[in-house]
Image 1 (spheres, rainbow, N blue to C red):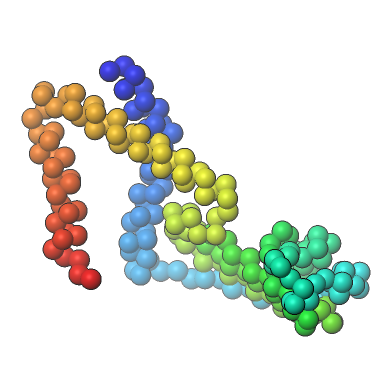
Image 2 (cartoon, helix red, strand yellow):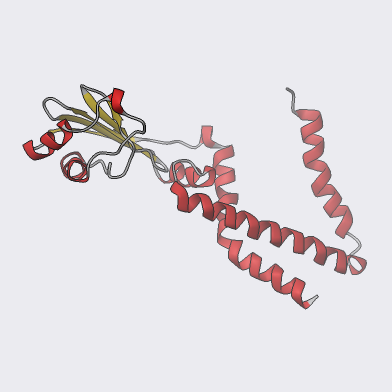
Length: 200
C-alpha cells in the first residue's frame, strides 16, 4: 500500500503540469474553429554577400543529392542576419537555380528562397499566436526530437498515475460505495457516444 501511494504521488507530481497543459489544449483544439487567430506575416528581401554566394555556388545540384543537405553554416548565419530566418541545420531543397529552406515550428512557419546565381533572397515568417503554439505542443507538430521524447515520458507517467489510481480505488472501494458506479459511468459514456453517435 505504501509503495502504491508512492508511485501514485510521484507520477502525479511528474505529470501534473503536463496533464494541465494537455487538458487545456485539448479544449482549445476542440474549439479551434471558434477561437480567433490573427496570424502575423512578415516578409523580407535581401541579397547574400559575395563570400556566401561563392560558398552557395559550390553546393550540390539537385541531381547530385542523396539527402536534403542544410545550408553551409556561413550562409545560414547571413540568412539569419539579413532576413531573420534561422535555417541553420535545416534540410534544404537544392536545385541548379535556387535553394529553398522551410523552417516550420510550433505556432509558426518560415521559409527562405535563395537565387544561386545572384544571391537574391525572399523570405517569409508567419506567427500564428500563443494558442496555436500550445496547440502544436499538444500535437507534437514541428516540435523537435526532445519534445517528442518528453511527450512519451509524460505519457508513461500518466499511465502509471491512472493505473495506480485504479488500484487505490479498488483498495478503498469497500468504504466508498459509489466508486465502481462512477468508474462504470466514466467508461460507459465514451463507449455510448462512440457506438451511437459516431458514423463512418
